[in-house]
Amino acid sequence: MVRERSAGLKQPPAAHEGRVQDPGLARHEWESEMAALEDELAEDPAGTLPELDDLIARMLEESGYELHDPVVRSGDEREVVAEYLAAHEITGALERGADDISPGDVAAAINGLRLIFDFLVAERSDVDANFNQHE
Image (tube, rainbow, N blue to C red):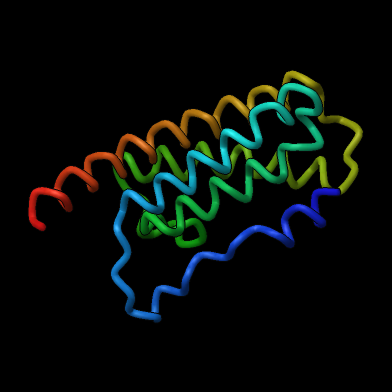
């Protein structure tokens, strides 16, 4: 079911495409996806965690965070990436069928990903305000 729904998600444009997109559009898409996931998270947290993880990974990448290069991580970025990687580790263990993942681990991962979501939306809101001032 996760793969079926994920296959229908719109892929973000590649960075090399050179298009300038209104930052508010990305934020709106993120908020819409998160709203759609909230009911599923309440009903099936472990089953929905991979979709939430995917959303947050795309948000981080679209916001310029380097998830796979430990050298560039510094300041707030280091904390955000560390939080994501901790949650991503739990997601990966669930996807591999690990037996030692507790409901508390799943809840911690979801809460961490929600914090990142809120942080990125607030960060994007600041970008939106600056973008709109310069138009």
